[in-house]
Length: 603
Image (cartoon, rainbow, N blue to C red; front, side):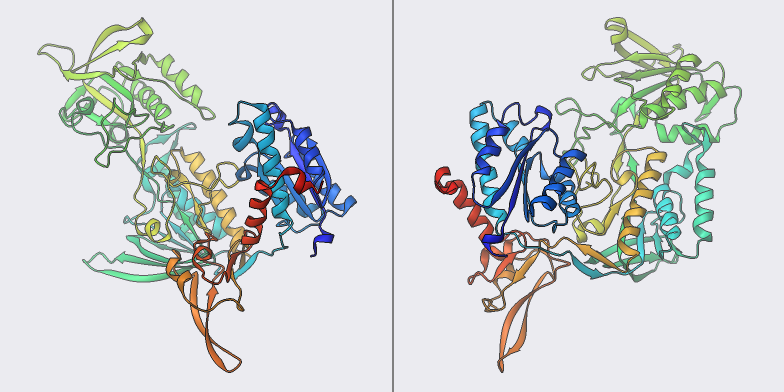
């Protein structure tokens, strides 16, 4: 497309005041309208809202626009939104450029004058760049229809069933001898009071009956290669006689449902290990599930009449207050489900063993889910005694003196009684431990899974792509992503299954076209690009016959290339570019930023 044909539409968003309170958006639009090839320059209160999107689509049709620039918030939030609006207007989605004038301008400048000047410069640079945009097409890659689900807990079972419902063949692998995960070991689960074991039994029966699902227990991943649509995952299966069988599973997509593990308190933490009657909440739930109701609960041969529950053990840790783990890390986050599980356990204990006293030591209580607040109200009605401690003054668990009512004393400064020091004699201390991510192992290492500061696997975007990893074709299900309850785990598993079905049911996958491309005329086959590429198989140098001579040329595998640009930087002949991010585009942007505004406008 020649320069004379370029017709650019520019749209500046107020963002409800987030941008316009600091940036003079009308002035930015006015200056943009003076630039060559700009046909339309508008402002809008909310560009991402339906009226803003329809404004873009309508202008493309009415004015024949063939390039679009939107200056708004972060592209990670709404670049996809505006590309869709461009498509509805009949334009290629990649003839679009996004400018961040909220996070990079209005939110970081105190001076409105400076913010307006910077926004004007960034929009000018975007206009210069979009002139060089080309219509691009997604890369199509043939895809295996099989899905691999790693993890046989409640999330993995739910994902496998949903995938089978879409008619896709599924391989479900689980490292332990049987399916079910941690949910199977629970008694009743909130909020409906259903049996955890029965829930798992139902799912396992359905999975076993599904012809599309192949189940491999005692199996773990030892390696993985490939890309979306064409993963090759090596697994090792323990045969049970001190030997293992290694096999390869070809899959178009992978669902990671490796779950989480309970935090393991360090020795001495709230008396853990030091006192045998200090147990974690998961251990207590197993004790409670196996005990016969009536009379008194018995633990280690001792009758239990007074029980202390301590919240936030291994969660919401603070540097300088809590001891870090051996790897020097702390779990800074709330594990979310511990509060409700603790309150339910306290009520269950009182109702099954009348006459038992329950003391709840908490920093804060969060009962966030549907029906969960009723569990808190139930605990209060059952007579649970609440004592609130400050983070810098946690409860102290010590040995009780002979003749005391219990075997241990829990001492706390209770903020509910203006800091009064209260001493409670108890027979059992239950630590409400938080969740930690389970080991993902070789799969994460070989495919380079990203994780957050808390160690859980990190999704691309919490709103727009909530179950997808940055590794295309790999999706998340359940508590490998973050602490959550059974209902949320199943919901994320179903979302993951829908995402995989959308990828694999067509027989091919579409990838964004922002990958390296090689100019055969300029390439001399030096190989510097291959040595700098971090993605195995994305680039290679091959020999070819040209005019009767054997020459070396670089070749790109678009399915493996991530468009990082490392190859572009080292090519001695400038033979490599990134589609949609070419050197010509960047040079145009730099020229526009450095040029005098009047010179750019042609005055």
